[in-house]
Amino acid sequence: MTQINPYLNFNGNCREAMMFYRECLGGELNLQTIGESPISDQMSDEIKDRILHAGLTKDGHLLLMGSDMMGSSLIAGNSVTLSINCRSEEDIRRFFSTLAEGGQIKDPLSDMFWGALFGSLTDKFGLSWVLNYSR
Image 1 (cartoon, rainbow, N blue to C red):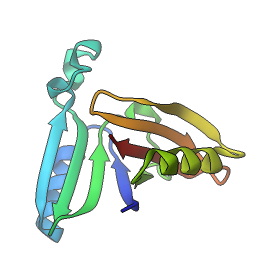
Image 2 (tube, rainbow, N blue to C red):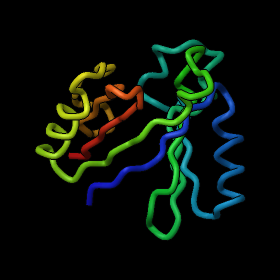
Image 3 (spheres, rainbow, N blue to C red):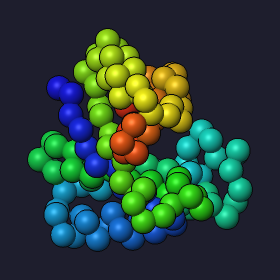
């Protein structure tokens, strides 16, 4: 099923925030650090303990996702990204192209190391989106 989930962006305190949300909301928290990922060798040592991806699930449903990957561009107002987990390649391609109309593509749709087709963009209203289709 296609669903939209909030993707929260942090500048170094993703682990702390996601643990807080787990305490508040319950559920299971999965954290992947930059150092544990295939991109580790491309990153500086001082950020390898930061969170590349976090997911909080409860009762089989994804509640929140998060990351420390915004870097210095994080300002109030751009700390939430809408994430669509698509159910088909046709859906991701259609959603991506229509959301990108009048907006700006940040990452074109491409195959990623986690086995998914992925892309990101800012729509014409300034909202940030990431789209993912797990193959």
